[in-house]
Length: 158
Image (cartoon, rainbow, N blue to C red; front, top):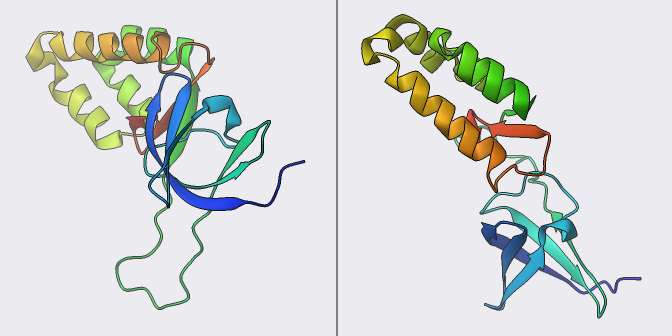
């Protein structure tokens, strides 16, 4: 059983299967990504760290909505899209990239429309670059063992 020794901290680095967390006291703790009890960690996430001699559990701190009237600085909820990486890379980015389908799948509607209308001007270079980036991200170390690829606000989550 974990003790209730909790500390407010922030994720400062994610490298492969390791996550570095900056503690309030200035200490940096490195834990395996499996210690996180939430999906899609990102640098800057505020977390609580629960530790004892045998294990470490990291929990994301959910932002509490402000009770103050809206002043232009309200809470912002990121749009998260999960797609099977094989479908995204081979259907969206390879076969249908010329029509901007890969960008539509990511939630980047404006860029998808631009790619659809003006992508031909690049002579296929834009499509090729998008496909190479999708290959490296999906099958590289970022999403290597996962079957899904995750986009947050149209950008690769890792």
